[in-house]
Length: 227
Image (tube, rainbow, N blue to C red; front, side, top):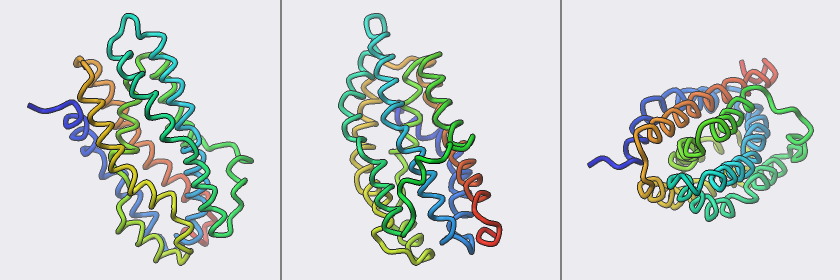
């Protein structure tokens, strides 16, 4: 029998090549060294939204819990998981400092529309449909962590010190465990077909939008670097 998490991963893997292709275009660009600081700045904009989005989902779970068992159990998972995600935006700032970039720069900039679309879609579905949608988004983030060979390739291609890649290296290690906990939580939920469809839609949307974020950030680097 197929589990909820297995079904979700099958859906994600249908669109994951889109994200993989965008990532490969970025990493193999001749100007990747110049692109990487923008990648970190954009990553910070995304990462710093993770805990607030989860807190909003938890608040919705509390609102729905009395009449919604899925929301009640999802709330229990979020209460445990939110503390594990605190401070990850500081990891990105540390990476920026390690490569000589200004770690305060992401706070001074308005996040671009590509970032707002990723985060905003989660807020919308949490508030106007059901917080279970966030599990699809989290699965994309933690179910498919960066691999060590890819990170090593990024280090080699940029020439930046290894200290500038600690956020990626930490997630490559930690998300293996987070993925196991996440899948156990998903499989324990009494999901109905509409819940499973919502998770899948959210997850596939996130994959496609993350690919757009990568393509977009490359356009913000001077043309001479990204050519």
